[in-house]
Length: 73
Image (cartoon, rainbow, N blue to C red; front, side, top):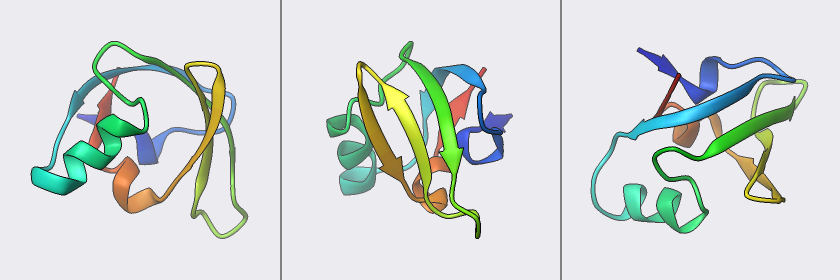
């Protein structure tokens, strides 16, 4: 299983599944990260956290902890 936190800069991936429950899953979905969405990994901070993504026409910064709950293909 490949998750978003293992992706490298300039990768374009598709969201396959969201893991987690309750408020965490809802927060991720509210940011526009849903099944089938295309995500471009723009850059990763020097210390590895957070990641900057382009998704649905906007830029999103997400923590590695949250990115590890997003399964991608």
